[in-house]
Length: 270
Image (cartoon, rainbow, N blue to C red; front, side, top):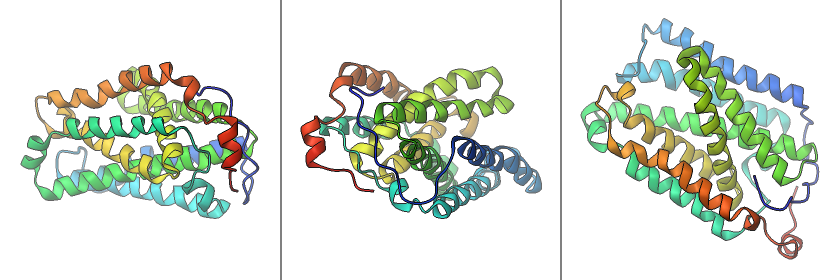
């Protein structure tokens, strides 16, 4: 997914996490969201996200628990710095990735439909989607990327495998959405690569987490499923961001990593 293979990062300080242990962590994370979410929604007697109460019980509470689990794992591993900070820079033109994502978010939000739902609904949905952003980025770009680097993989493989894992776990949506979860998983893999590059160009896991949450917020705001609307034409903006970014990154793929000379000048920190 990247251009020339970047040298593998030195081993991260803190506890070691095997591939199998990471798989277990991800499974627990998904179980909290998928099965815990159903239990909590049933307990609250809420089955949809059309109301503020529905968003709280079906999204905010289970996603909040998954978020707490993610950062609890980071704390237990002693990986706060490598999970939150990123010392593997890319060339500055890669800022185009978060800029295009932000533009698509601003165009994709259905402001009119949201205004009809009221401020409490908007806040609840914004909190829920930020929980998604910070939770998934903490799990897959924070823990996942750090774990892959700790196993000695170069950045090209880190980018590839962290993005593929991110897409693959979304196949769990097959329980609620059937076969449509398969193309979604493919698109999510692409999104994972965009968020990975955002993490690296910004130097931390914060910007990609915020943008991830806002991206989902924009998609949901224009969704007939969520807001009981007839659809919003602006919702195509986030979708169009995928092919636009894919083309740009394909053309510029060999110019993502800094030159070796730049790497030597900016040594990675543990």
